[in-house]
Image 1 (cartoon, rainbow, N blue to C red):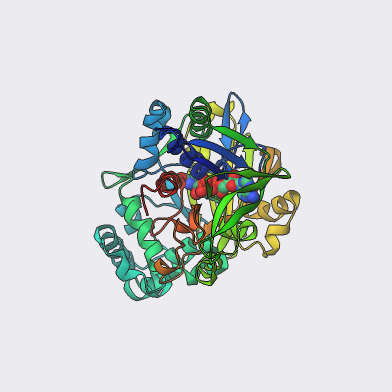
Image 2: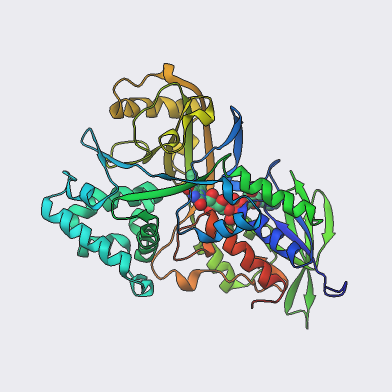
Length: 445
Ligand SMILES: Cc1cc2nc3c(=O)[nH]c(=O)nc-3n(C[C@H](O)[C@H](O)[C@H](O)COP(=O)(O)OP(=O)(O)OC[C@H]3O[C@@H](n4cnc5c(N)ncnc54)[C@H](O)[C@@H]3O)c2cc1C
């Protein structure tokens, strides 16, 4: 590439999306500087050291359908770190944990009337094979499921699952989103009765570290603890349009040819120039549910299930993810790792509770799962709060997805609200980062 063609590009955000965009641009020969507000990289896949390894503050795994991130791992020479394990999913209801992996598990699922189990199985089978998600876009998952799977299946299975991801906004979610969850999850099955999930030995930090190394090796510059406060612009044409010329960070104006932002839409609106009524409407439509995830490092296991959906409405959390029922506890010095998961609005009372208050609220419910559970089992407790964890995908979402190329020339947006109809995840942040790189360099409109 000639010096004339070489672009100087600023990337805002050092999560998987921003790092993937930087990696892609450097491969193409451009100059890149990445700005991350936190003192570390990784964004939502932030990890901490434990025993001789690292661990995510919020549970993470991959599906076999997550092929883009697997390709990236191969490119970075770290494919051998990815290991696949059976998923051991369960469902807690009426004081019992039901296995919830295979069609046989569904047929034995007592909370549902036998005929409704069969009906639910047929609906899932249909969605696994159905490709035309656009036809499901206009309705909510609640309405569609009540109609086709029936109210019994909705109340006992789908409602708890949807509430588990969207809290009080569960009934607003599009059927296209649920289609994406069911359709893609099928491809993570090994035969009829088994599902496998992937996890990199050494944690997702292995991917973040490899991206960081690749960026630095190719001459990219990474600034951590560097919050971007404003995107700089100049007028173009007759002053009717704006063009991005750089960013303001660390009290300085820094000039760039292109700016790619990977931060949540609400934060982007706060630092972006005027983007026009239409585009700003799309950004405001992109609302999020927050994730409140408690991590307990324990001396004993709570259950033998990896992923336990909670079917009881009175529980103050929505799922339990016992990481060491998925990967070996020996990686963590023999400790048991339990995540207590909640998705809720940042206005919810629980969001404001201290770590101790949260633990106090959760404790009696953990004892309902295992009556022997005691605080003495807990060796450490961390609480991870991410306000922009889960985009709320409402019916007819397609026209609300903001374009990557914003109305401001040379300013590109790539965040999780643009992942659709798939559910957000690291795999799709890699895809989005690559796409942002192509848009920034004019290889994609
Ligand atoms: C509880 C939970 C469980 C999950 N489980 C899974 C899973 O099992 N599998 C999976 O694949 N995915 C999972 N995900 C989703 C996955 O982690 C995210 O989709 C992905 O990491 C998002 O990456 P990103 O780069 O798009 O955004 P982010 O990770 O949010 O990165 C954005 C970055 O921008 C930075 N930033 C914000 N404002 C500024 C500013 N002004 N200046 C500079 N930097 C700024 C932030 O600090 C952040 O680091 C989970 C997420 C959560 C919350």
